[in-house]
Amino acid sequence: MVYTSHMEEPQTLSLHFEERGSGRPLLLIHGFPFSSRMWAGQQDALSGAARVLAPDLPGFGESPAVDSATVESYAEDCVALLDALDILEPVAVGGLSMGGYIALAFARLFPERTGALLLLSTRAGADSAEGKAGRDATIAKVKEHGPGVVAEGMFPKLLAPATYSEQPAVAAELQTIMATASQQGVVAALGAMRDRPDASGLLAELQAPALVLHGTEDQVIPHSEAEAMAAALPHARLELLEGAGHVPNLEQPERFNQVVLDFLANS
Ligand code: MLT
Image (cartoon, rainbow, N blue to C red; front, side, top):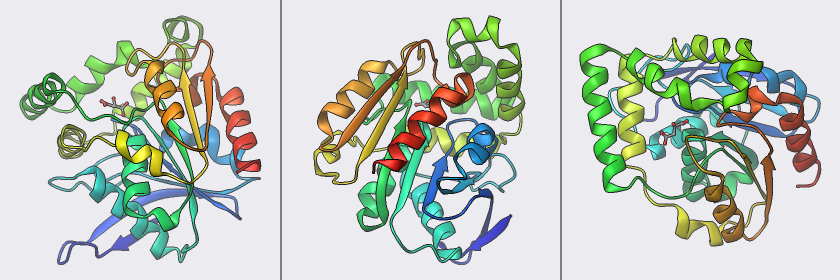
């Protein structure tokens, strides 16, 4: 499905998104460098409890790219999607990793539209100076060699060590998903992550119920980040998925879906 946003005239942006179910809206924002396809195991499983909306961010999956982006512009794209669907009531906003950075920007910019937050395999802090320099180096590499260098570099760390050997189909699916990321989309997202603000101070002000979910074997973002967020949020439930890596919804879909369904039922 495609909608058209006129957020930044005269640019017109059409984002692809997947939609399943009805009732309470649940927005699922994908991580980097993935697409809405990463939520394939959630769309049907959660559709009995929510209207699940999963956009492809600009330059990922089937959405056209933009020249530059910020976590705020991605959050605005998500709100434009909700507006286009006439969803004006508060929604549950979930995001994995980069999607979590965007979910936090959404909560900061649109508190009245944030009914609940799902912070999945993410962190509240900004990039360190070293992290920002790393983003710049990666942008230079992507410009020279194409987006595949990101997938290649990240792949060995994305899953729990055991997932690679025990669930090779999950590893293959992740590579398929990453292969759809465009050069322009990857460069824009790296810039957005590099420049994102520190959201740590925001957490104490967030009144929406929050689910903070993280794999104990996450090799990209340590689970101590989730523990710190849950401690700072006034209404948080912390779930550490034993043995899961950075993409727990793919690695342990049944457990993941059960935790999300419990959270939605109680928030
Ligand atoms: C992600 O998984 O979305 C990214 O790796 C997060 C990051 O690079 O900070």
